[in-house]
Image (cartoon, rainbow, N blue to C red; front, top):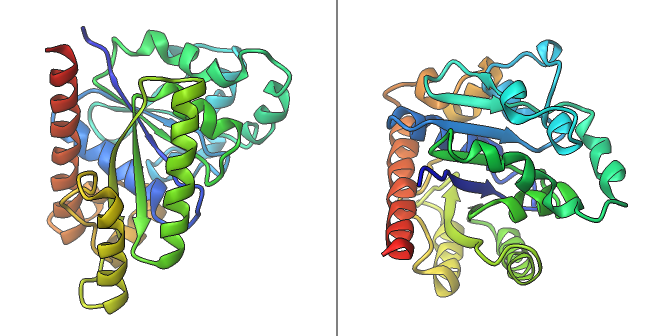
Length: 264
């Protein structure tokens, strides 16, 4: 089967580097020779501009996908990264939740819209808004895997437990196949006592799920989106590119391992 690995990046807490990580991991997976579709399900559209798409040039977006106005193949746009395509976001998306709220199949809209894209791509990466509303529920219902980016701060621990409870609910109600692929550590600084203490706490509950490669604090990682570039293009040999490239390989290996285990 050529079914895509659909990975949702989620964390209802803002400021954890979720969108930056989704963009950079998608770019690194594409650089591993995979065909990748990025779905920007956040009305803020930071991933869209972070991949160099000018919002004024967008005529169709995820909004049109969710409301059935257009199919994914009419909306997807190529990015500057070879093999990486994007279904962009637009401000219209903010109103989609209100439009869909009375529809019986409202939580399955994204899943249905992406079903025909699964054979065209190896990976579909969905970036969620920093909330647990209908857009995020649609993403979690469509996804096979979830990656949760966290910071080594105590507030992140609270967000992590809330989100894992939500994933369990989604699994019970809408999507029995969803599973946590991993917890990724963002803006890591091993010199800080707080970082070490929080990381130890996360390991108590998610020892086997934490990705081995932490993403370091880096000015270059923060700068890249303002130039509409993934870190792999903005700072090709920098520590951010090296870390995200290693993490992308971990993601690919975990997906392959789980798929192999499920199939065999």
